[in-house]
Length: 253
Image (cartoon, rainbow, N blue to C red; front, top):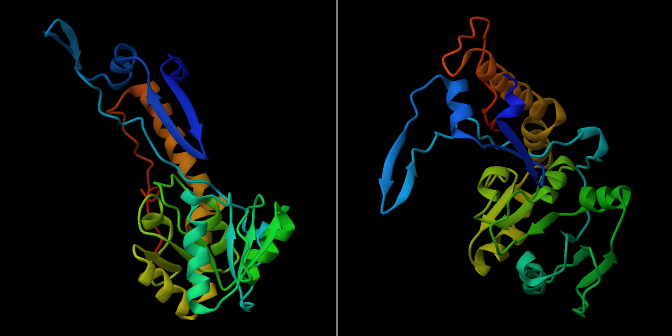
């Protein structure tokens, strides 16, 4: 049987997530004794299948599309929708506190502030130029960000990230190495004042090792090979040719 008969692929914001859609069909793939238990309070109680077929694979980037710069200019950057839940207000108040400058690339907003310069929506070349020369990128998202691709784009340019400490950022931003993750205004201010402690080369190296096409491509290869083996021989299918199991490795600095 073809695995496509049993699985449905859904993609959201570059995150590949595969969901099981039929317990009976997947039972034949796994060749495992998943059974239906009777009824509870008149409702059929279906035993849940372990989510072996679920996976999260991050966005991928071509490093050649991002200009790396060791030398930074005297401004911070915010890229995205200039709305409250994206944390623009936090970034503005932070640069006010330290006497800095903030450049904003995104839809126009109504905030009038001498320390904020708006660029509107920018193309890929201008976006990369702004990122590569910024002292840091502010990503103080106030909700559970599922990925926040601009953070990885900035690191590809050698630019540190100042973010919140929830959602995806504990995974993408290495605290003290590729930026700082913050939970209070005082922490954001300290991070902005001390962003010089972060080395641009570390940002680039982290982004390349974990989010390049080459790296993420290996994750997709392992994942689809796994699904293929499910369809051919079930969950207990052997793989005598395996030489490594690195697809989930996080490469640290």
